[in-house]
Length: 287
Ligand code: PSU
Ligand code: MN
Image 1 (cartoon, rainbow, N blue to C red):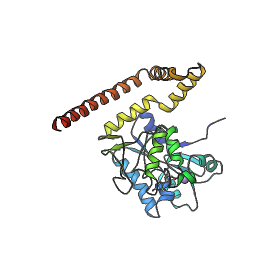
Image 2: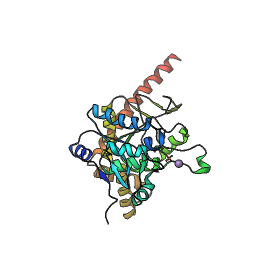
Image 3: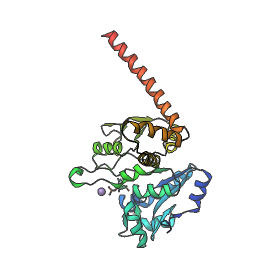
Image 4: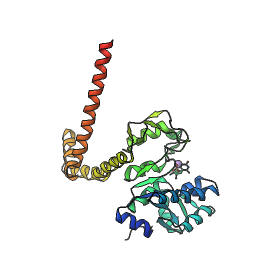
């Protein structure tokens, strides 16, 4: 058995191997999301703007059955003009590939392929999420479950404007998907900078964002937790012994990096606790 063959352009492969900056771009945005001819203009402009800043763009889509990381300009032109091509989320990838079709990849499929190619950052417009009435219809995008399992950082203006943001934020929490505001603590509403929902974390510089990504990738959370749970299970560790076992496992498995993160988090909490206590004391003295 071989894996599903994916094509990685030479430019992207070389940039990834060299540790040079690469940004993944999805194709559903120009196959299904935007009208012609703006779709093609926007797709090519995004690539040009990245190149102008020394970043290699990796536009991702399925061309004639080949999931491709780093579509050529001609392929982007072809996909953006194709009639009736498929909108390919992750479950559609094998089908579209096996049938030799073209497909515009959603955030889920794009993130999956980006990760397979070693690309860690992915810029898009809006994510899929939870639709209004999802408790009846079950309509929740596979973007969510895929991002939960895929260590790729997605830069977005929030979720699609039509979605239930409150419910989507709850699902991000359940699925352990970190949500971090860039220079804001307000979750954006795609067209508006503030959807009315607060988010827990904010970073103010690209360097800060990069440190968060390094910390997250350093922990290798989903895979690591799966191994930790499996190990606990195999040893029959249950109940109140679970947490110490799991934490110890994670610390050993990350060569102590999880500990450093823990300490950083604790330091931050201590500092914030001090600030809150100071404010509380000031309020009491005034009152
Ligand atoms: N945001 C938009 N328009 C879109 C999408 C996002 O404003 O077309 C696309 C993205 O590719 C996203 C996908 O991954 O819709 C989610 O679709 P679904 O809810 O069917 O999973
Ligand atoms: Mn859906």
